[in-house]
Image (cartoon, rainbow, N blue to C red; front, side, top):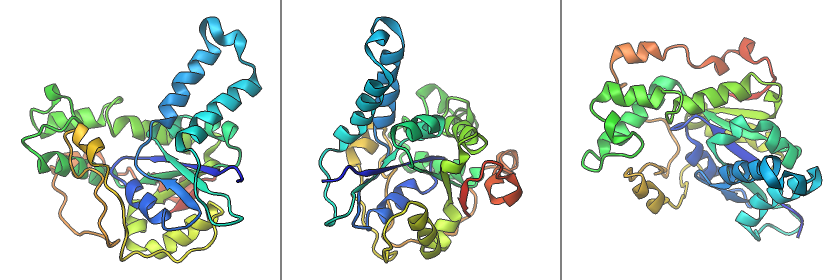
Length: 278
């Protein structure tokens, strides 16, 4: 069996990556695509052993590449694929935006799909998820920062917060020298024009053409993963792809603070040549 073709998924949280992965898996060659995996942090930690400390003399470039590449390939194991087709893996981690060069070195020709969304609606989505389970105390926000909406949002936006880290990572990749490896998928475009979005994405990933079903999207919810974060329903995917119209449920001052955060929608602000689907 031929080695799989590897791509990656990253970008901003609460921006449709789980939905997009579920749609992509309808294509028979896509053997693996799902919610966040441990592969990226495993590779980053292992690479530090190879280049620092007493063992660094034991690894040349070829050995490092083989071992690190093997982390991903062995994590997913033997994969099914249609006859005479390479199976495709799409590994999901927010870390990949900070390791674009590493991803390309290990898997030349790979692309990183960056799911993005208006930051105001991302914060709104986080707050709705937290409020959905008020008795559990979502671990998305540390207990000492859960006092009120403002303290929760301050943490989410902080440099090490669930949005703040991803925002900085995405900016690093988008404005970096390897931005041409990125495929930026705007959530609003995905839910309002899924057919057009998937046609562009399928071509950019060099997948065989496929007629995706946007009325019956199936995804096995990672119940244990979400429950471990006291956030059941975090990865629920609706069966039908479409926009849900609702009011923004965060204070106007916070929405104003986040205004202007959709720079990828401006063709003039794409210096690195990323593929934009927005």
